[in-house]
Length: 356
Image 1 (cartoon, rainbow, N blue to C red):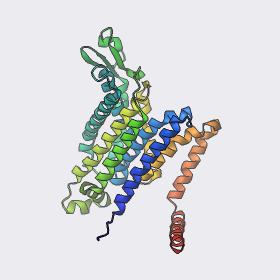
Image 2 (image 1 turned 30 degrees about the horizontal axis):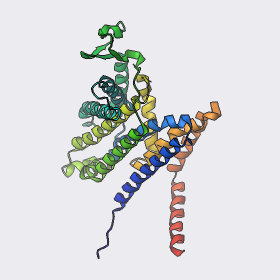
Image 3 (image 1 turned 90 degrees about the vertical axis):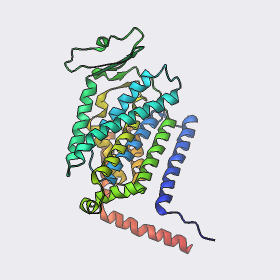
């Protein structure tokens, strides 16, 4: 009989899926049994959002090889569009899980449109233009949301831009039973929180399936060829702009879905939450996990989200310890001697197991 063989990449992908599933089951059991602190329980949904953000950004930075500094901008587009969709559909879609799913799809759609608008002109250029434009995009989106007034009543959505600072939510002329969804600089307040850890797990799995299958596909191989040598890729007929745009828009859409889930996890959310620091935080997850290493992004996003809360008991020293841990990890992962040592240890263990 012919022996069934599984590709190494396929085996790695299934191990990644299995690891996430096991982690979800374990955390669910621990939460239901009361073994998790209230703080950690509240971090479960944000952790899922950050994992999706890190994996999606790794598609742009690690797989595509382009530096994006505005991933938080796509997250904010998804967050506020998702909040608007969920709040305005409360009477039409009474089912909470279905309404959450619709909000996440809406968030992904609007973030994908934003990614397409940003990517079409910029991805044709070379160098660090993408980093500069995405950075500007994130700041522009934040300022626009600070000027945005949105409400909903029986007549539908009411929107206005408060560019001069002279308008308020009353200028939307909502009916007495209308809902004020976004109140300018105050952000989205009074939001009905419908996010759940289960929805976060589903989002992480969908993100992993999309990204890993894209990377293993013909499109993914074309994207990596562009990353490794753009001139060689063009010489064999690869449409550089097309494949760059596919990766970039996919990354933005996944960030938008994560943003919608994140936004619907809080009753109050301001645009300042999605500033430059948030984009850098997501980039740190990607770099520490390893460029192009999807499993590393999952672990880095989880550990570095939990770590500040775990160190909260150290008060003023917790952020110092957090910074030291980041520096040590960076040194370890980028040190040739450390990698060589690890390379010598692993074969010895395999040899020892074979001899045993």
